[in-house]
Length: 118
Image 1: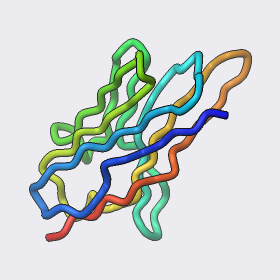
Image 2 (image 1 turned 90 degrees about the vertical axis):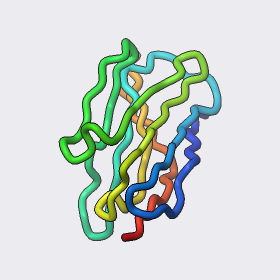
Image 3 (image 1 turned 180 degrees about the horizontal axis):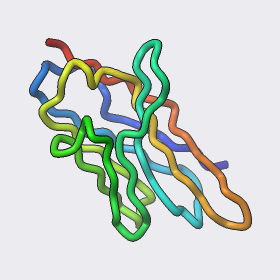
Image 4 (image 1 turned 30 degrees about the vertical axis):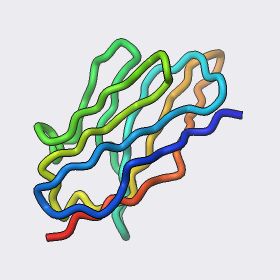
């Protein structure tokens, strides 16, 4: 059974940086996209950044220029480098893999808390 294991969250002051990692445990084939979402208290989950297996990436406007998504396709790992963090970036961050085979399967990480203090 495939699981996504996240790490790297924590508490940081505004202007600081954090790097999130998400690794798939177990064999996983047919990954189409890898991405990061976040959910702040009393808000809906929103897309932060996503990248295709080929390396194309897209970002939410609120994080463009500050966050960078990258991956290690051999290790089936995706990263999110977060710089110039702001209090409004505070949320639980979830990684997501979309797998395309004969069906579409979404895998989610357990979530990691990122708290940015002012």
